[in-house]
Figure 1: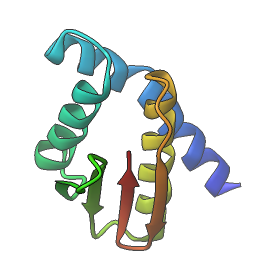
Figure 2: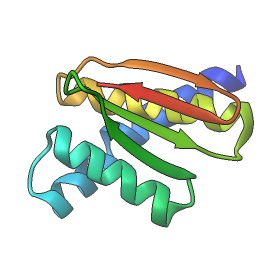
Figure 3: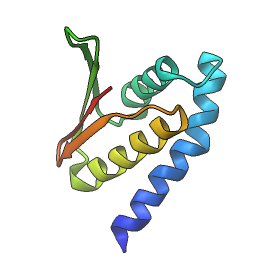
Figure 4: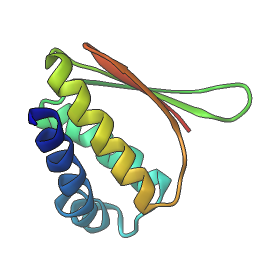
Length: 104
């Protein structure tokens, strides 16, 4: 039951307050504002470390490294997935107990 509640909380966070915050800071909701908002949440929200790289094929690889344990990874996974759904972007998202990797 806890995993369902945590997943739902993450999805609601992404579709409610995070969406509004991204639009208020960046002026629109798109991949750039998603990445910017995620970076700010990690840097100033204490979610962990944000790392972004671009592959030679032009894909973005974002790594979120944290010390929040498995529950933190579950939350971040669901938050990222819900946020990306709002901007109609698909990504490969993988996680373990210390991080989440997003390939867009």
